[in-house]
Length: 175
Image (tube, rainbow, N blue to C red; front, side):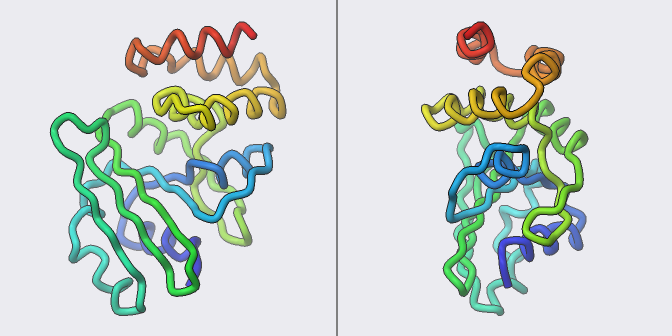
């Protein structure tokens, strides 16, 4: 069992998802070392303990965390596989995040075909998160891809983000 197994598990249960985070950044051209995989979904079914019963029977540790009313997320699921590999499933709640799942592309990641968020969508998610590593990843993605093309793709969907994300984008895109 490995992190790709989580994607397979989600797919066989009809859960739309996409790879995000460092592994997705690497799949989109900027190698980054990480010990975990991150997936995005908007399907709250993954926040039910019974959803993970088959995984638990295989010795997988599942930690389901529900978001509260003020949380920008519905919740998160942390999965620790028997080999020690970690997978986080971010459960988003906004329509703009659902559209990221619509646009995700199937890519080969570690020998498995899984849905991966587009470069521009990774940038949107990182603008929403707004941390120092997110800013570094945005800059790196702009360097290793066609900058003008990626900027145009980000700006086509920038209006989906909360307004407080715009100053960060303006500072990065102009620099």
